Length: 294
Image (cartoon, rainbow, N blue to C red; front, side, top):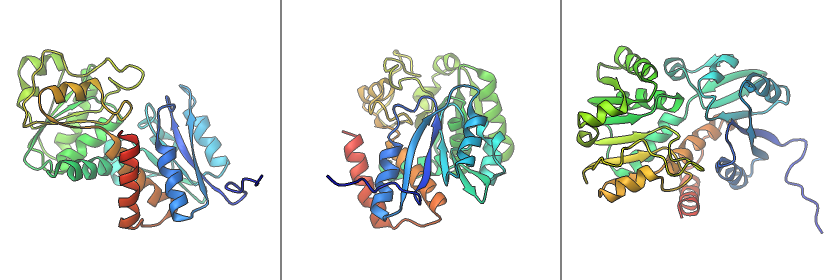
């Protein structure tokens, strides 16, 4: 028998605040990265109940966590409980990464950069000159909408069941980036043929996420075109109903594993104040996508 020496009094603590967190694969990503880089750190998921975020953040700060990620449903609320925000967090109003520096909490958003990097790497194209449909109006949708607009999209349609939230995001894009965004409910979008006419369709809602795998933001009657690219930020299940619908129409379809990977890499670099070598990223990416994409 050998004593387990992986965690000790010098171990840096990092983690994830969200609800649910049972589906997350972030611990595998970050803990493998720590092992590869020989960094004494451990990443743990922490389920936070509704109205419990402030207490959770105070607890992590009191326990001197190096930093933490924030996921559904707290990406917007977290901004209330930090000391400083990056310019993109101030613009989008949401964050997914927090770093504790000498007792002060700094908020970042690595989702958008992770999304664009994974999208371009997997599709070999970009958003410049493209028309895009974005389902959802939560924290992830807000940050992606701003990034998509910044990347040169010529039209951005934002669809959400609560139309006012979609309006708010469209207003932010139109006033801060360029007048390309339009918000509407999904029914109107379907009736006007907008979904079928766009180049790229992105789902940021939880529809289709485990365990509600039979849900989709896309109506069953919609028939897409083979030229369209469909991206679902959900990664569990690996192939959502939304992506199956896209595949049945012959579209190129991608899940959120690539986005999860790259936003995680960026977050880890922020926490540890390092630049991860490309060969490490490549090796880990291949293993990560192969293992969780099977």
